[in-house]
Length: 79
Image 1 (cartoon, one colour):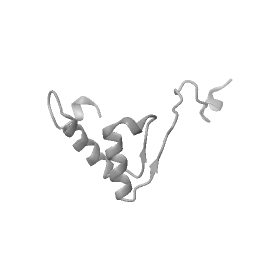
Image 2 (tube, helix red, strand yellow):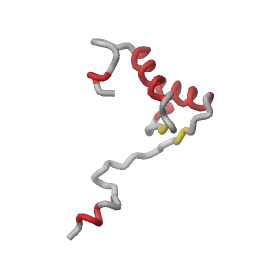
Image 3 (cartoon, helix red, strand yellow):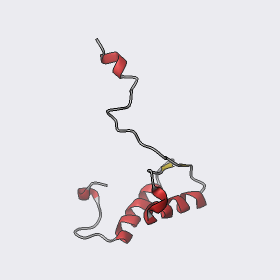
Image 4 (cartoon, one colour):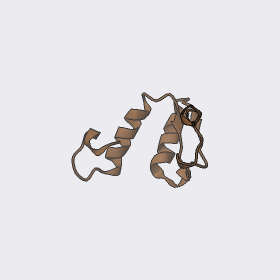
């Protein structure tokens, strides 16, 4: 969440961030974890909430940097 879009000023607490994240979850269609989410108190809380609300949860074990990925649109711009 960009700093200028957060509802609090300086030095937000973990609880402040979780309130923002949980509010965002309520309008999401699916929750996608990041690698090592299991060691994040916030991610564990978000997955717990999502599962209790029967929201889809996608567990991501690896993320590739965008410059390594092949996008279908790349073929359009190749000469």
